[in-house]
Image (tube, rainbow, N blue to C red):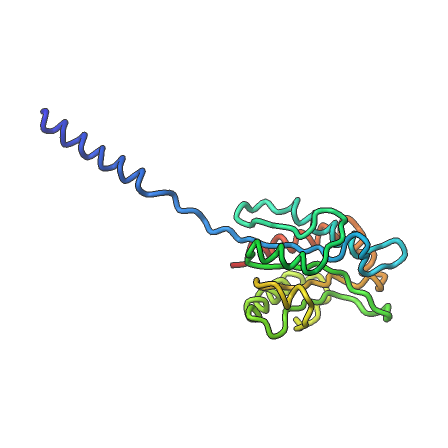
Length: 204
């Protein structure tokens, strides 16, 4: 009887040891930087009282509010209406070492009939291929609802100098009446933010 009891106790001790020795597997988190373009004295695009810096900041805030995925960690280059040098933005981004940088902007042109979304990735950068994959995925998320141009390459400062894959997202034209009404409405901003959040849940 004693031998049986001793064997049981020994077996339980081994189980307890393994329980403490094997930590829970932690799911890999995705780190994303949302760069709300412009800010402070830098208005960006402007039409009457509508300013690009305010629209992109509002959409960025909605992305933050709508993100309920604990595995997607979102950082921001700015949380207030403040002017930041591009060098400071890049320094912040590179210190975070994110999986993706998504820079939000609003387009403007002299042709009021031009509308739709545009996506840019860095030209001649190390992360070009991964950036292209992300831009294609985000474009696909938007294309069933919006007019979307093919992904383009550019030498924008943020895309050229950040070490992570990056996509610059022009969410519409402030110079186009239909785009402007949509981009400045709460429903429009929320829909764009919701689609961005859905995209972030799918990236690897």
